[in-house]
Image (cartoon, rainbow, N blue to C red):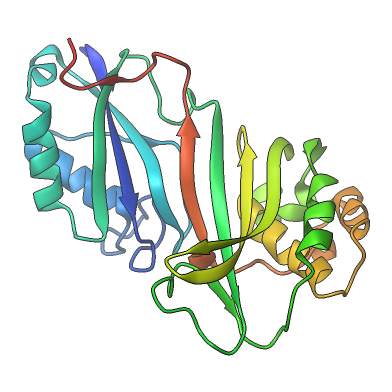
Length: 271
């Protein structure tokens, strides 16, 4: 947008099961979060828009704090934030939640200005299936107990900057750097909505395709006793996707938080 005066930044959450991921697909009939949001914004602004997002979540993955930015004109900056949020909430489906509206400098990008992202992966164990958390967890029926302490010890060995090629979708690793800095990988027992869960809290500056889900699937192998914690270092050193554990199901993963530089985002109606 040549006459961009500022950036509009929408914070949204969504349940991912009905979508083929965040990013729009070549076939416009395929339902995506970006497609629904773009169509709503184009109705409100009465023009075509191009969106940038903090994280391109896969099919079935959920979000509590996805951020999407688009350039806007001086005239559009005068629109009332409450009315924009009300209109977006009315036009988008009920499984998308508009959680905030901000403005930023015209050069701002929800993707490239993000300092770090945090995900949570959830697991439920046992024959008694999840109730309120159904659709938001990986339900492991017949695995038995997992050694959470061993999983956490293994997780700590992966912290720092490494080549995570073993932990990403093989086809997506071609021709790109697979170096990433993993800042957090905690494995704990928690309770949410009355459910006993195992949670993986994962933070990094950026992630590779399927990286969090492969980390979760690999640590489950340690938890069930198939490998000792130090095995994850051999997986890391192999730089081969076949060395790691399974790609954990999408429904257990949620994008929880994105951090931006202080002062980068201002409430929309603040002048």
